[in-house]
Length: 235
Image 1 (spheres, one colour):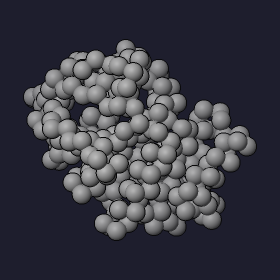
Image 2 (tube, rainbow, N blue to C red):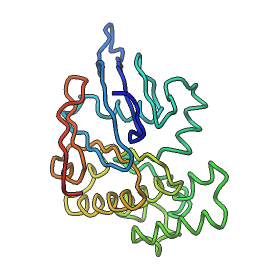
Image 3 (tube, rainbow, N blue to C red):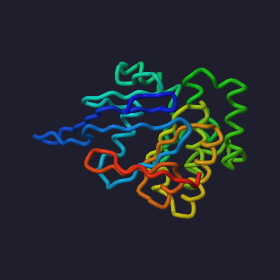
């Protein structure tokens, strides 16, 4: 699956194993996949099937044992740790199941944190952060600390934080897995709406086939490979 002008993420021949005691356990085996610019892909599969490992590799937080990962024309697997960190800081947003907000920072400071790392938390950056908080319905909670927020509110802050540096690629690891179904549905609808407005690419790991219906494509992770891409017409 070679990279082309419509492909944002390309994975070719990806292998990844982990050491467990005296043996190596293969998690990803000769995995091939393309993810197109401006589309939402849901990755579903059993626990332990390699879904989170896949996101960690695409983000550059981990490296495969073999194979090539490209984001646009950039070969992520050819970079060292610092280069991957800087690339991720500028081009990738990550939404976690358990929010990962910084408890000592208030809502606005949490959203601004990626811009601070890039020395872009100026007046324009703060204005954009407040616009995002307005979109996620939390502008009036800008000075509130995370421990005073509900789970759904924390995840909405996390979405704003992931989008604030305008990344080309957004990765979400079970972003609604820690929420009740009604709150999860509202958060997912908001996240997909914002991603589509910004023409960003979203790769979302989820255990919910219902929520996966929000995506353009559904891929199933099974035995270390991705299978059965389903084209959705809803979006």
